[in-house]
Length: 167
Image (cartoon, rainbow, N blue to C red):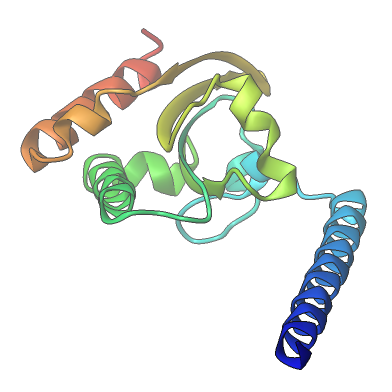
């Protein structure tokens, strides 16, 4: 009988401690969310020069992920980054193209799920004209092509080229 009482007390203590920890974490998250002033698409790729992202006309390539990422998700990110850097080094340098990796589970980035109708980790190309989003496309074929690096690169680069050419 005494053993059952000890187990109950330990389990109850664990539950109370867990709930307290969750409450503290939620309070911290809400505080951080309320003080955040970050604008995700203002962070440039490349050399970190903030004036690059100030261009009113540019193309942004986003890789959206969540905190948990499987090996395939990392592969999609790495292939996308490599395809962008290999195919568009000049456009990255002059700010016509920006590549960003964003975690959708971070409060400032959560709106992208609705904005781009995201259901999973995604590569999205966005055309910015006069500082306003003009159009966008979710490159869903990345999941089909992740096993074919050459095909993956061609797909990413072809789609970006269309956006850079205004097509």
